[in-house]
Image (tube, rainbow, N blue to C red; front, side):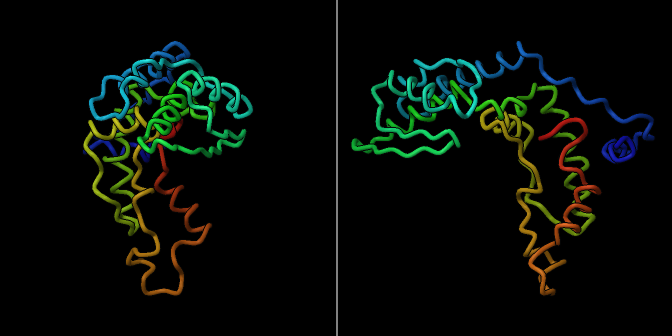
Length: 212
């Protein structure tokens, strides 16, 4: 990986690959999640701000806890029509049709996110490092392999989206493999599983030991 990351250091002599920032501590994760909820309350584009102003980050929850924990959270806003499954599924009715139920669902999910999302919480330093990796190495690497992605977002947009969604933009997710010139003249609709694995080995999705 060190040799790979050297490509991202523009003509620096490749003396040493940059060291990834450390993973966040439990306290840092809690602080990031608190700020994530507060940013929704501070937004002037969110519907029903009274809901977001009443929400704070609680904790990460296991799937089997979702019906009880999320149900209690939603019930505090008078929303009792949501059916919550332990597999993450939800169904509901919104007779008012004003988006209030959807807002309450979203707010409660922000307050009590699934515990699997914990590993996607990253510090600003990690996101900066990841953005540099994606733009300086991953996009050019995929292009050299014959796969053109969308134009990367700006650094600010990349970080804001990653904080909000707990998911960072990747060129892999913007490539229509079936429509790339490499495959349009063949009977294949994209790379095989083996070829895709080889591509990911050549152009890793994220820098070790980080994941976008």
